Image 1: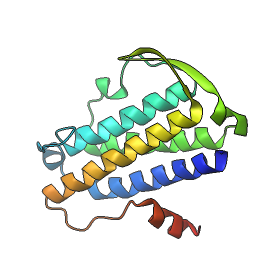
Image 2 (image 1 turned 135 degrees about the vertical axis):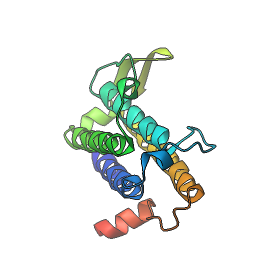
Image 3 (image 1 turned 30 degrees about the vertical axis):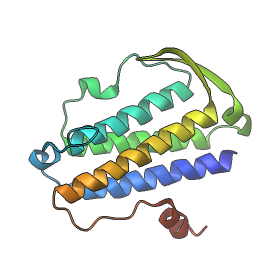
Length: 165
């Protein structure tokens, strides 16, 4: 099971890097421009991806955070993208560093909104990385609404082909 989730975490980092390359040079006035979506701007969507990956990573590490990392964030979109990528790398490193039996363990944690929960580690990883994929799709739509025409593909199959699998 471990190779599947290491590969998925590698893909997540790769896809987040590709998406960050789209927005890294976008002026803040454009990345904070209101757009109708789950989160009303590119910056807030990136912060949400960062928040989610950070929260789920902490839960996998046995920590139950009591607030989202973006709560105290005052930086620009470029800094939000850097934080998101740093967390994606930490997520990959954590997953890659686990023994095979970790993925089948039932983990207990407290959520910010829903209290005590438990989930298998592999389900938590799968959920988190799938969640990032969902919001990357929204970022693609937002980029098009901002007039950004040339976008890199973040499809898993392109990652696998690039990796040689």
